[in-house]
Length: 411
Image 1 (tube, rainbow, N blue to C red):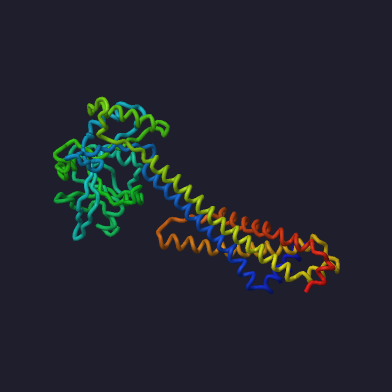
Image 2 (tube, one colour):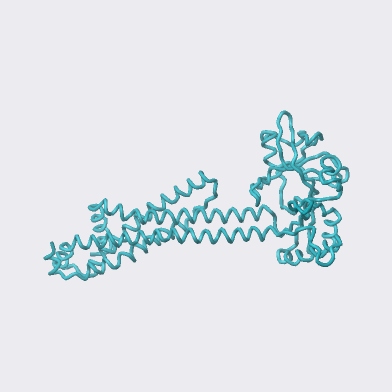
């Protein structure tokens, strides 16, 4: 009896005992489905982290003001207003490895266009900020030196603002009002999606930095006309980022006259470190989920072994008869191994379908990204087949070692 004959015979036997075969299949189906779903969710989570790192921009350091203390109570970071445009200029001049040191001043405000309004983040920038963030303009033009010097009333809007205020109609040249000040829209930015904090990066309006100070919210920072909310530093090379972090700290402490053990009145963050830590956590969680899912496959293999052992007991006389008419022990082993492998492979195919459906439902219901990988599907099916063969070895061996005479006498 060759392999294909053994396979056909195995399929016929499984069809005869449909209920028992179905119950044995369930373990493999659940195991393969769990592996496919967990791999898809974990891969999607890693892809999301990588995408967030990409949208942040490469080789960045974020310099923020420190926290203000009042009556012994320390407020949130960014309330002390110790950073200035001169600090940004000094960082740019002092270090050759710094490509850009872009200042930013921001505040939440109400934006109005026609009969529509929207609460959003209004930020004063210069063109270097968009370059540092690698933020492309979908339509229109960027800010110019003339816009910055004159404090022009022009605005660059994100995709969310374009959709909410202009219904995705052409926004270039349209007028919007920030507070009581009218602005002309000169550009719409490409979409960037959610940021690290889970807030949409496209829900923003950018205006010239001088305009925010002179016309919009110059008094927001308690009259500190030069105060900034953020300095975005872009390094020329990723290897220079850790060194620049220490050098910028030393420069700002010197400029802010912080002597001895006085604490910093600013903070320097490397967003790539935060995202890398998150990526590591996601990777570990993915390994954990896949390990748990793999245990389901092992449980399925045990159910296959149990089914095959019961089959050997029930078919003892059949085995004895086959040996009596010339079947060799290896033919008996091949037959039972073929039955176990068939169970596992059928369960694997069904499990792939269930796993893909489950991953799609997770993506739809929870809003999580999933990434269905052909290699993961092939690996899960191959692993299911190996589980079937491994857990079918002992029942096949036991069947082949039966004494033909004793087998024929069995009831």
